[in-house]
Amino acid sequence: MNYRNALIGLAAGDAWGYQVEFTSYSRMGGAVAPPTGTWVISDDTQMTLALEDALQPGQSVAEATAAIVREFSAWARSPLNDRAPGNTCMGSIRNLDAGRQWFEPGGAIESAGCGAVMRLLPATTDDDRWVGLTTLQAVITHRHPLAVISALVLADAVRRPEGRFLARGIELIDAISDGGWPGLSEPCLAEVLAPLLIDIPSWIASEAPTLRNHLVAAQGRLARGADGDPCAGVGEGWDAGTATALALMVADAPLSPFAALQWAATSNGDSDSIAAMAGMLIGAGADSPTFWGDAGVSPTFEPEYRPRL
Image (cartoon, rainbow, N blue to C red; front, top):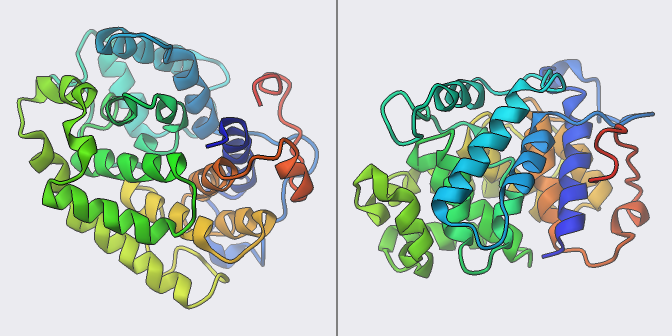
C-alpha cells in the first residue's frame, strides 16, 4: 500500500464529491467537474487526519482508545468542523465527552453509518494489529456489526490493492461467515471487543449476509457499465455497507483515476464519502510519487491542510 497516494486520493475524492454531497443526480446536469481554485475537504478527510494524529506505534488498546477520543473530540469542537458532520459521529463524541465509554449504554451510538469506514486509512498500516485498530476506530462511534465488517472488508482492500476488489471482498465475507478468516483470531481484535461480552466471530458475521448482498448488487451494477448514477441498484452510501460496496465498485471500474473519481462524485448519494473511499483504494495501489498529477488530478487544498496532504 502507498499510504501517501491513498491519503491524497481520499482527500481529492472527498473535495470533488463534497461540492455536490446533497445534490440529487437528476439536478447535476452531467458529470461533476473537479473543483476550481481551492479544493475544500469535508469531515471525511478531517476525521482521517484526526485518526492519523491519534494512532501512534506501541500504544496499548487503552492508550489508542483514549487518543482517538481526544482527537475526535478536538475535531468536533474545532471551528473548521462546519462541513455537515455525521449525526452519529457527533452524537457519539458528545456521549464520550460526557464520560461514557464507547461500549457502555449511552456511549457509542449503535449505527452502521458510513462514518465508520470513510476515515479508516490510518488504522490499516499496523501489520500486526490492523484488524483490531480498524475495528476500534469504527466502534468508538458506530457500535454495530455492519460497521465493523464493512470496515474490515474495506481495510483489507486498502492493504491489498490488487484489483478484483468486489470479488475479493465477497471472498473475505464468506471466510468471516465460515469462521475461517485468520483476522478473527487477532489478539488486538479480541482486546478491543472484549468489553461487549460477545462471541466475536458470530457478532461480526451476523451482518455478513447484508454486506454480501450489497457487494453482489455492486457487481451487477458494474456489469451494466461504468456510467450514469453509480448508486442506482446499489444504495446511496450513507451507511457503511453500501458505501463500501460503491467504493470497491468504482475502484474496480475500467476507468482512468480521473474518470473514476468523477464517476464516484457524480452520484445520487453520499458523493464525498464514496469518492473519498474510491480515491483511497485507487491511490493505495499506485507507487509513483507523481501518480495523481500524472492522472490529471492536481488538487490545491486549503492552507490549513496543505502540509498534511
